[in-house]
Every structure is written in C-alpha cells, then in structure tokens.
Image 1 (cartoon, helix red, strand yellow):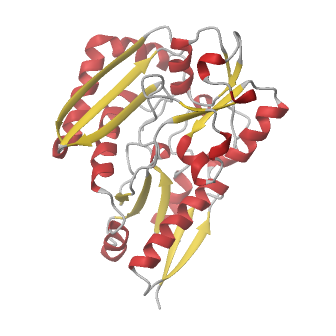
Image 2 (cartoon, helix red, strand yellow):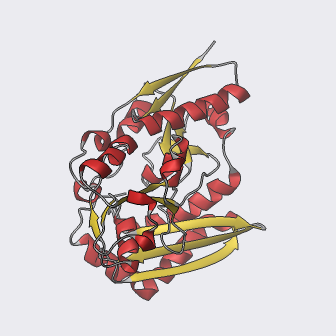
Length: 313
C-alpha cells in the first residue's frame, strides 16, 4: 500500500486542518496510507516581531514548499490566506477546499461587542488589514500587536490585559472554541484577508497521481472566488504586508468581488466591487484592482511601502 506524505505546520490549528484533509481523502481513496509530517516554518519561529516588520514572503509556507521540491513530502496543506500569490516554479495549487465562515471574530472581556468596547480599549491583532478597518470606524481604540498560535493569543488576552482580540472565525470554530466569540464582525465592518477560511493543497506540477488525488477535494465555487481575490492581491500588493481585504461570492453563476485598501491608520479607506462570469475570476481581480488604483489606492500603497518591508510576492 502506497504511503502519501503530507506536510503541515506544527500548530494545533494547522494540524487540525491537515488531519481534516486526510480524513476526507481516506473516505475517497482508502487504498493509500497517509502520513502527516510536521514542519516548523519561519513564521512559527519568530513570534516576538510583528508580521509586517519581518518583511518576508512565505513566512508560513516556504519550508513546506522546499520539502515538496526535495521530495520529502507529496503535498502540503496551507491556510490560503498564508500562501503567497506567486507559487514557486515546479509547484501548483491543485485544490482549494470548501470555504468556512470567512469573517473575523471579536473575543472580548465581558463578551462586549465591537461598538460596546470602552473608549481607548486595548485591542490585539497582528493584522494591518484588521487594524486599518477597525481604526477607520473607531479611531479611539488602541491597537496592539498580537502574535502566536491561537492558544497563545487567547492566553495573552489575559496576561497582557487586552480588552479584546480579533481572530479568524474559521480557526476558532475549527478548534471548537466558538463559545468564546463575542461577535462575528460583519463584512461591512471588516472585509477578510484574501483566501480567509479556505484551505489550499499545494503539489508538485509533475506528480499527476497526487494532483488527481487532491483534486477530489476541490470546491469549484471557493476555487474561483479565491482565485479572483488572489488576482487582485497580486496586482496590488507587491510583497508588502499591507491593509487589503477582499471577498468573493458566487451567486447564479456570477462572481461578486468586493475589496478595500486602507492607510495604516485607517484614516483613508477605499472600497469598491465588481461582478462578472465566475470563469473570468482572474480578470475580475485585475479589474477591481484597477478601480481601486484609480480611486487613490496607488498613493496609499506607495506610502505604506515606505514604512513596511517589502519583497517579491
């Protein structure tokens, strides 16, 4: 019986996600053995620096990709929001699983909702995207960096005296901690990260057996939506950790794509949307990126790149 080797980050959430993928594959293809190989990434090792200040592409993916290229694993499971928009030569995204709830969640003292947080409330998040959108609505709150896995972040809420922290709904619910959520932030409040809530399966391009196997888990609607979001991000981002949020939805064979770009302090926020045939996902992402640029996104992004480390992504 052939053994399929699957690479995963070591965190509790990453391992849950990889085990979930393996369980789904076992149902469809029980003729294989499946072995999960934990791999520590740079993003898992550097926990005392804000993500935006590290300025490196593939913080949570590079080591997994290297293991694939060196034939140490057969495929890797990623959170799509961690996967750079440029995939290394020789690798490809062969499947994107059905998307979980892509909203952001507020976890707070006394279960307060976002609008109920006291003036000057101390809120933890490592995301410039969340920071900018929340400051746009509540410039009075104090945003503080919050790194680490979900367990660590929840502990820091108490040890560092945060009034609230912001995390992805998908991660919290996958670990069974939904009772900790005070509020799922509406998309009008906070657009999610590109790919948030979806899992991606990355394989070698020259491995048709693994491509066919993992392709069984591809969800077509999610694949097109995330493809549109990533097209937009690739056009705008230029390798920076910058405040960009996006959300694609398919209804009646039309893909509706909404996105925002904001200044770091949230004082300027540009938001727009496009729609079109879902098969034109890449073009729709480029079209929306162009619309945002024409409304001032280019200037915002140039200013951000002067203060945030950038690479090629």
